[in-house]
Image 1 (cartoon, rainbow, N blue to C red):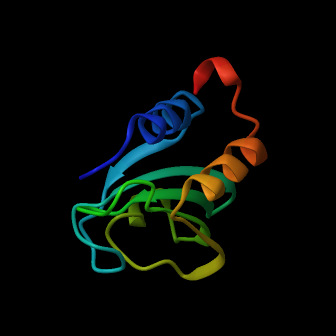
Image 2 (image 1 turned 60 degrees about the vertical axis):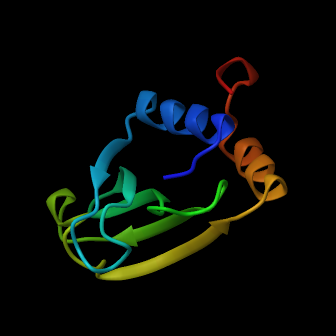
Length: 106
């Protein structure tokens, strides 16, 4: 997987913020992709997905509903409520500002 240093810092920040790292084993997204998941409401999750073998800065963000945390990475979501593809530096900068990532952590 090709991920640049800026992306790596964001993923470290996500893990420090309570996001769980899940390896995708299902068919919804490419097998072997890495999913960072955090429950934001009952059975509603914020996901950041590093697509396996993608180009740098190819990250997908979702708000989705799953039956349970154990379903993530195995099955398709029950519902997709939000999707954003982060493909360039501008998208990434916008997302960092939206998430309010402290400058000393990026």
